[in-house]
Image 1 (cartoon, rainbow, N blue to C red):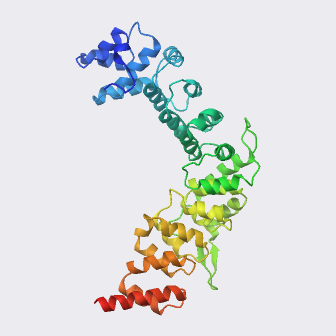
Image 2: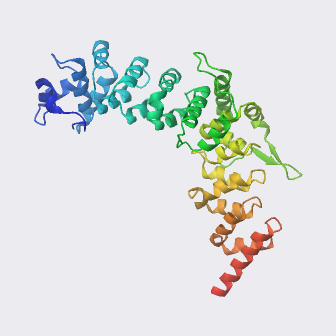
Image 3: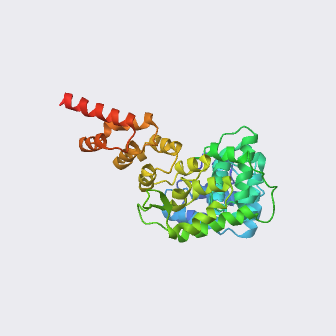
Length: 374
């Protein structure tokens, strides 16, 4: 039950009694409620935090509820104490959007990366701003920058500044489209921090709201092919398409990373290769979207390369088939997929005039190889 960095022997005797394995159930329940007469606020929070990890579900839940509803005097006192890192994590989990808690946690000497990551992931706009302005902590814990960037509540302008901070300090982040976002930032003017949301911040939210109203059916695309064989944006998607067109490159990249399937299917066709690549790398990209993308003749070879390199996506037979058929798929990747196709599809491809000559040759070789083996 003890947290790894909490020295129970250093706690006051009443705290040790409440946390002892042989402690009576009523005493432990009272302790989980924070009823520990004579203890300092910091010690109360330590005891309650330890009990929040209790093997007894009822005690653990009581303790977690207590952390969420600590009396203001106890909370204020605890926030000035030198709390162990694991206890700070429990506070961060219990009260992630309280500005006073966030401000205090950022200053605590034993604050952990896990606590900061949780605050960043759960932040709303105000607390996201508080965390992001502490550049020293951001540089010491780069994964916190990643969590803030991937948090939709964090301002677009703040996300830009965080990417710029990482690039300026030679830090490579683990966000899906970091290289694309970094390249875009280098060509954009980053505004100074402002207490009020910028135009990009407001526009980012506006696009999000419009995207929520334009939902696609499973497997539906944002485009349709006209009589001349050209892809055209569907009428119901045009309002979102227009709003996305007004986005900056870095805003498009973040929407491609965090947005809806509708946004990804629009942005993967963006003429800016950085934006299109970010959409193809989005962690939210589903197999049904990959089927649409891999069949499109309007996406770039780079997008098709990214799809072809994604092992989860190419498990789909239809994605394999589409990539081989698509003349824009780089030959290296299309040729690797040919041996995984069914005999009937190989024969169809061998007769098709839509595949490249190089792919048709590989397909014919595969058919001959199978005939000889059979």
